Length: 207
Image (cartoon, rainbow, N blue to C red):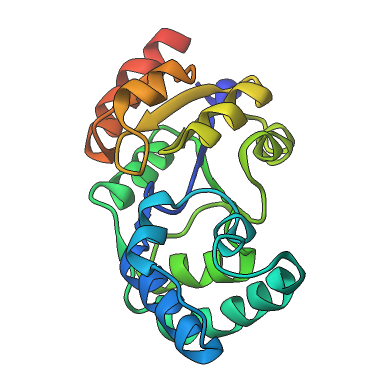
């Protein structure tokens, strides 16, 4: 299998980490800091797309860039410690390594903050690429020759398909199983606890 070493890409928010408590707290702090109402509970039900796509619901277009910079500046001290690993996340990364493969993270999250999350949780992928959403993720997936991309959002499915990678979806984020299948996911798992067994079955199929 050495010559067929597999690279598996993983999304971050709601795939490897449950960032809802930290993001909720950060939106609440941004609301207090700016005096602008933000429904933080609503915002965390639609994680996945870039930050600007959420901020446009609460701020005028001309303020989005400044508000995004402020949010990212506040984020490390508010959101990192409040975020936990998703069930099965560490085991999923370990399964790729045990199979002789490489595990990378490709996320729409601001890359420095993505790296802070992973370091805080002791999750050590081979590479972390941030600031890419949906089809843009194909850039990094192709660059790293990823054959599989694991994510929780239909945008992740689109990214995998654009890269020519197998789309493995986990129904742990805002998109239910039927929506992930309709978007073209090749495989839908309940959560990452099912990933190691799926991977062990997938490797002989490749061989």
